[in-house]
Amino acid sequence: MKYNYDRDTLEAYLIEFLTMPSIIAAEFNRPSNYKIVTDLAKEYGVNLDIVILLVAINRVSLDELSEYFVDNLGLDKVRADELADKLRENFFLPILNKLAFLSPNPSPEDHTIIKDIFSKQLLNELTADPVLINALNRKIFMWLSEDLDGAKRQIENAMLNNQETITPGKITVNNEKVPGTISNWLRCFMSEQGAVNFDSLSISEFLSSSRNTANLTAEEKKILSALLNTYRNIKFFPDSMPSDDGSDWAIIPLPIVESADTTPSQLSSQPKEERLSEEEVPPQASSGAVAPTLDADRINKINQLKLLLKRYGEDSIEGQAIGEEIAKLEHGQ
Image (tube, rainbow, N blue to C red):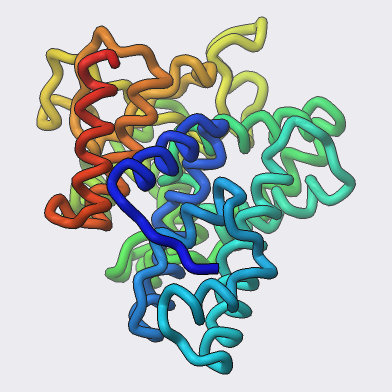
């Protein structure tokens, strides 16, 4: 299973990857997922970017990983088997399971997965690609529609017990120094603003005037704002929603859309409390603004390519192929 890569071949693979549903590209490119790949690549002294791409587009199967590593990366059989097992168990299978969960099809495990996300993995979702946030919101709404009071209670309790660290330093809650976990930040807000004051004004006031938020970075405040808005949206659902007909609803808020005449310094740190359709998904802010004449699907493809370009480097053969494809998309080709 020897693979030879030239620029045209790599470009064709990238195009095939980007024509897949946007939720697949977003999940594969999720920073927390890709950290697993970079850590394994460093541990085994190999570059895994191309094999990730080949598996994603079904050119290499999970059962063929070890053979690929021997033939293309020069690993001996023992290390190839080890790496294949780790990559399958820690990267590919969790992604496949997450994509299955985020599909429109209901599953008996959906409620348990949602509770686990809100109790142990919420930070990863608050900062996710808008496509992934949209899909998770849809799953949450399905549960709320089936069991409003039970879903609200279980999700709220999961958040109140979440021990993920959202800010590195300690905060003061009721005169006690405690870690900056999701649970403690929610307690902090309620101790300063009251348990029933979860509205936009009180959240904004807390972020700007609390002594606990005084030294937070803009990014930390943005994540904290998303957390507080998410808690409010669950606790006071459906009164927390912006309309009565289901339009613009979201539990986890989506980022603000960056317009062509808006610079990054002009962007608010408050998440946009709207649920956008997949056709309206905004580009990732870290990828830079794209010409407003481009359609949303092309913008998403450009932004995914720019993420890949950062990993490969502009001077590599892979980077050159990616750069050419970005240029084509930006010029409407």
